[in-house]
Length: 66
Image 1: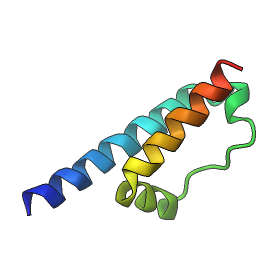
Image 2 (image 1 turned 60 degrees about the vertical axis):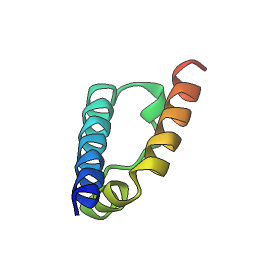
Image 3 (image 1 turned 30 degrees about the vertical axis):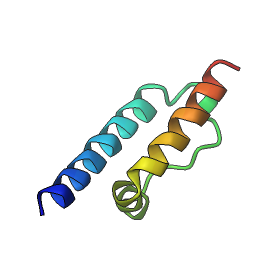
C-alpha cells in the first residue's frame, strides 16, 4: 500500500510543478497553443505521471530552446 501512496504523491507533486511552471511561463511562446488544465486532465496526469512528465520535459525543452 505504501508504494501506491508514494506513486500518487509523486503524481500530485508533478502536477503541482507543472501547474506552477505553466502559470509562471504562460506568456512564453511555448505555451501559446496549450489549452487550460481541467480536473480530468489533472487526474489523468496524476495517474500516468511518468509518461506525462517525460513528454512535458521533452516538449518544454524543445520549444523553449527553439
